[in-house]
Length: 113
Image (cartoon, rainbow, N blue to C red; front, side, top):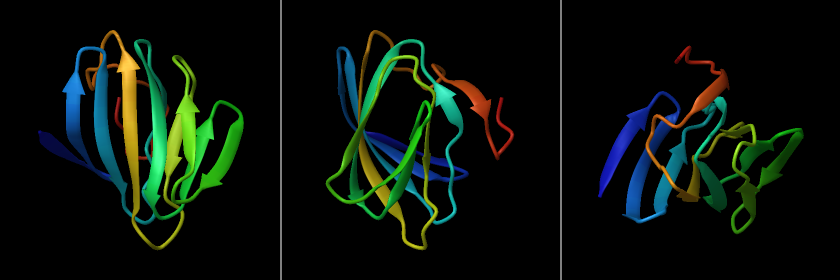
């Protein structure tokens, strides 16, 4: 479908349809997505490679291959790679709007608005 490069790595849209989108997200060693929430979508992340540090509200945990996290609508969340190998996750988004501009950022090391 399409991909975008970001300061922390890249994402690849694998499939999308009414009310859902599936992405592969690659996070480089030391990469850290913003602490964010969404007004229109929930997400489900499954780790397929590496060790992902996942924050969902007040919970922070490391997930490895085959482990998953649910990100409810409105939850503050973050994906980080604190290790030396690339992290890949499959993200499934569910919601009434799945645009990239549905992001409320609370903290971002790359100073994006």
